[in-house]
Image 1 (cartoon, each protein chain N blue to C red):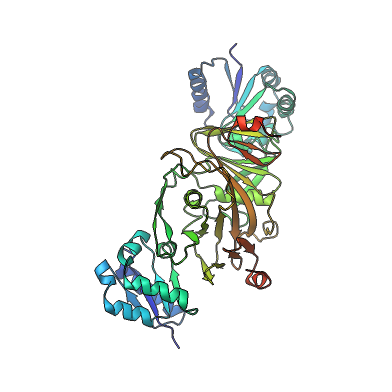
Image 2: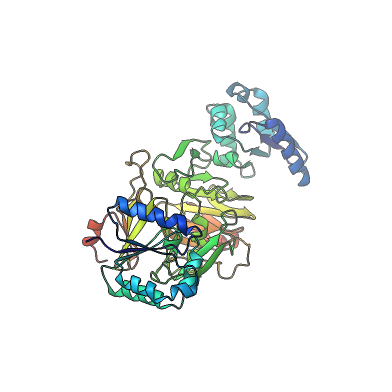
Length: 245
Length: 245
């Protein structure tokens, strides 16, 4: 059967353009059972109609735009509670996101950050996301927009979280909440701060230079897998099958 | 006494502008004994006058511009042989470089590389530099121009070399050939590929995505020190004094 896909265009400021593009893109994948949820206000997010549609969806996809809008509209709503409950309880329920829609999946979330000021304390702006992926931080448009610096600062602020930097035309498929498989034509950077020794990030004054010892970093191409719980790189899904992850 | 400083403007395509700027900048530091060597051709580089001036200099400074020009003009000359001999034999002889002038100090040298194509095999263009710092690779304008990707590829190609990425308005003072001390207002990134496990960089086809497991990375602020031989981060020069480096 044609899966029911709901596209949430809330992050976007041009939802009237974004919605039809998604309908067209899914049609190319032979998916025609698409709903668009253009939720613009927190009151909108509380409408029983949207909750009913969420309960009936097989896939919920969050568009790009401004990631801060997502928590602002859905925070403290039954919609987000239900999304969270279904995500953790139902193995076949898929939540997807692109750009801002991907970044909002974490609990601690990158809101923004200037490239020229990167790695000066305070260049990265942090906020709160949906919390569906509490063990990671996600950044997007990573290589083309030169965003290494802001992910480095974010991971230095929260070294227990794994930094995931998504290149263009590239995504990750996360299964079991911790297996990160790379899909698409470009690449994914994994930044692991668990072995950080010296780190002035918490204490540094705004605008001063960061000083951080010992990040671990991986470059993942299509098909490579990273296990968040083990903090291990695998060449392929097949390689994971023989591992303990 | 006023040290004799020779500024080599060979890398620059606007030496008539660069020379006076250096003379003015050194004057602000109360250094007035400055010579400008505007060597434009390999034949120029072989003139006995320049060799005599090199032998009389306390400091030789290489300007920015195009790092490939430096090896092209000085390769296989007595000038480069003498520069090298003095650098390794004389503890007080200083060789300095900015931008291209810094990048040319290594043996394997980054010639260029496109940011949009970063981390696709072949995006970084490698060449040969002066070889004064055979254990490292240097990149410049590192944070502002988003050059993480090209240093990552360069280090993945030569994992025995330490990648040094210089931020704006920031330099490194290298003593004993292996102690890297950070000076200036911004920061320095150290990229260490010695623990790389999986690495497809040598085998990958041009334009395909790299896949690399296990870089180590450090962010160094002013005063932090990195020891290349030990591959260790130190908070300060004082901390090194108590170490084995």
